[in-house]
Amino acid sequence: MSHAHTPAVFFLEGLSDSLKAIAEKVRNGERITPEEGIVLFEQGSLGFLGSLANVIRESKHGHATYYNRNFHIEPTNVCVFSCKFCSYSRLYAHREEGWELSIDDMLNIVKKYDGQPVTEVHIVGGVHPKMDIHFFAELIRRIRAHRPDLHIKGFTAVELEYMFRKAKMTVEEGMSYLNQAGLASLPGGGAEIFAPEIREQICADKVDGDGWLNIHRTAHQLGMHSNATMLYGHLEHYTHRIDHMNRLRQLQDETGGFNCFIPLKFRNQDNEMSHIAETSVIEDMKMYAVARIFMDNFPHLKAYWPMLGRQNAQLTLSFGVNDLDGTIDDSTKIYSMAGSEEQNPAMSTEELTRLIRQAGRTPVERDTLYNVVERSA
Ligand code: V47
Ligand code: SF4
Image 1 (cartoon, helix red, strand yellow):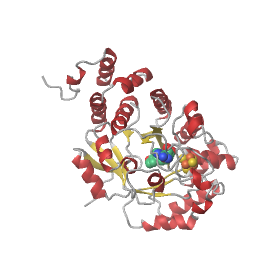
Image 2 (spheres, helix red, strand yellow):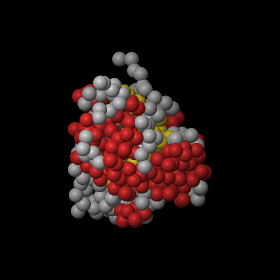
Image 3 (cartoon, helix red, strand yellow):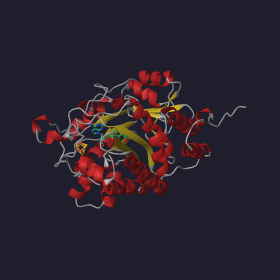
């Protein structure tokens, strides 16, 4: 008997009743509860989780694996906050190691891509006490005037909360001001772990979980889209991961404004949490799979390859991931400083698409909003 569109049942043999019940729900396209999410983390084998995640991935996207031609701008590495996992934060105390770019400097970066087929600029950096909302609105207006077709995705909720507070603007006022200047989407950073008992230990002084969610809610209400991340593999327990994903799932039910979820593996080099061992590749793949199973209303699951390295990124494509982000220019320093696999996180489109094909998937170029980009050869 063949089931072309249902998962093979061989992996159900020998499973606990609760895992069988979860597999049945997934097969019927039903949502799993937070308690079931924890059971998956605690009891699900790598093979079981991968099979379930893959069923969902293929029913949503088939073999399509998205990538994006983008580049990053980091306006500064100076930061008023002191997240313990961040290899940047100490730089505020060592200002001589810090940099800050002027609007002209940043426009020159944009101009380097004139005539090149990039569709997105991703702007994200530290939280500099002197770079205010008007500075960034001007930057956005100048980028838009120079290259109107470029989608401007910028500023984590952490940067935004600080900008709005300094300018004495409400979240609504600040967000619509930047949106009118030309900010089109928000990246997913700064989410870390929402649960206060963990957040207080790893990034006590920046925006809290509710504040992060409220900034994304407000952006969605203005018609903007955004991403969401989760920093895992440090002090948190499975319950905190599920709580984090559950809060995102609830907001997504409310607004539908999230494009993708990006689990970020904690990397331990050169920061105040270096004593914490990094998670294994097996744990990483389980994380992606559970995310794909739990986050049923998130269209896309992204693996950020500069953090994982090329080979592990390839592996995620069998554990629910359908997006490998972009072909990023080498200006992305935050990750190489934290000890990520890729000291030079730039990959040509040819290399990225080859990697996707080698994993048995089909590369598809997308824009920020996941419209397929057709190019004549
Ligand atoms: O919020 C900082 C993380 C994030 C470390 O939306 C670390 O498309 C691991 O969110 N180990 C910022 N992670 C980056 C980010 C992002 C990246 C790519 C694409 C998108 C998107 C968003 O980087 C921070 C923090 O969670 N981070 N230090 C570290 N040692
Ligand atoms: Fe600053 Fe972001 Fe690093 Fe935290 S993670 S210290 S907010 S740059």
